[in-house]
Image 1 (cartoon, rainbow, N blue to C red):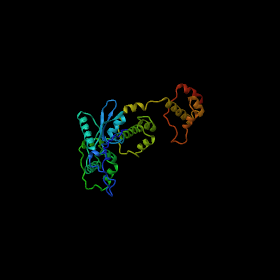
Image 2: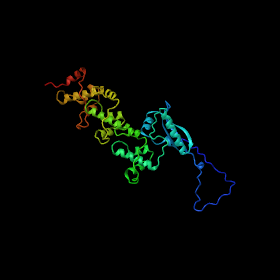
Image 3: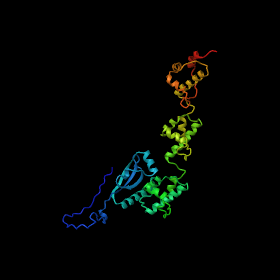
Image 4: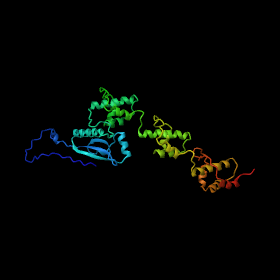
Length: 342
């Protein structure tokens, strides 16, 4: 954690005669001299440890560099790479910190460095301008051009989410007109309605895999699907029933080939073969072709009686159902004595 090293200028008043306190104003301190103000801001940058590549420049004070989230692109890099924080300069007045931040961003971008900063750096808009920016973004959201939440707008403009909510839902700032952002090109490309966040892409991928499961192109359960995409079976169920993310379309996964191989509909595992054999034998028994008990089936296939009982549940929703698999000739020979001769 950053240590604050704030030096205060203290005057030696030991030899001075104290002025009498002013009645009613005994706690007021004269800080009109800027040199008496603490220089508590610093400029920092995020960089990837392996390559030393800088991907974000900012200014802050206290624990700012180590807390809160930045824009989605910055957070994506932080989640995928080992990164760290580097303090460039500390003990700065805010205005000087803003200037250094802006100069660093301009320097890196002139060198071709791909920073994730959306705002150009050193930008400190007035309250009126900020409200105008929020209104313009809300206008684009209303028109279906952008897909942004109030929290994303707040993060973009470094505002409190409550402030953005008030702008969107009250007449508190009705006299202020929408104001287009200088970097609107970058904002539109990043938050366009046809672009999706990483989470939304995952949901779209899940929808596509569910579609392939219905078409019997893939062989997996909803539990396996959830495990593959890092979701709970309940979330998968909600997505399938359109109880959530109904506005996200099916999206083809980039690694669709790997998924087709992993869940190949034509691949039959040893476990599936064994369960398929149970289904085959039980069908023969149900049709009166053979007379055999669950225990005898278990002994033939080297499985537990309990597993076989699961295939005979009266509750159809919970009964085990597998594609039949004809036993080998060796096992069929062992079943032969159980056939009913008419």
